[in-house]
Image (cartoon, rainbow, N blue to C red; front, top):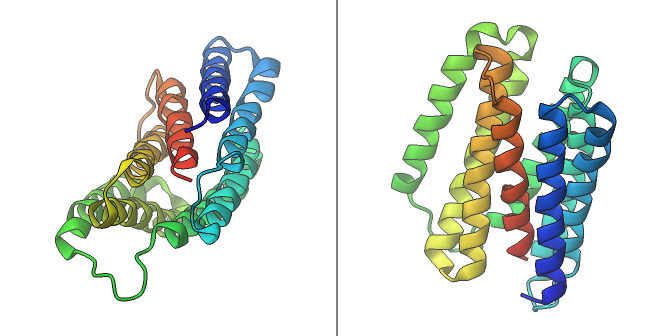
Length: 212
């Protein structure tokens, strides 16, 4: 973990905190700057990794972060671009799944999958009554993000070590962030929703970037 990466990670978290504060206070223009800036800094965290890692892992994480940036921009205009944001983040989850998936011949645990599957099904059941035409896309997204978190857990259990742990922690925070976002949008409004969403989302992406 180089000082450059630590510095970039700190700046990303600071920018994310400023985005959350601006949104909370209704400062629209600074919010439109700080939110994508934070994700751009997260991309630099992954890009600056010097420790040898499988090249494909780094490529997949960077691609996932790139789609996340596109999703961030779309979700700054949710009334018009929510489906586009959902599609961009779905692509990010698929790329993270490919990064975290076990290699050939490595076993996976059904018991480790079970809590993630139960959580995903419960979340979808809560959201389903108000999803309307978004029911299928949201179901696909819930499946993708829960599989992503499960495979991150599998990777940590199989390999151990700091970087798989960072990826797993990031995946869980990502799952929490998107759960709050979906619950606030489709089930019941939560007063500090955006603070909770961004307060878990940016640390999640930083941790995943640091796993490279």
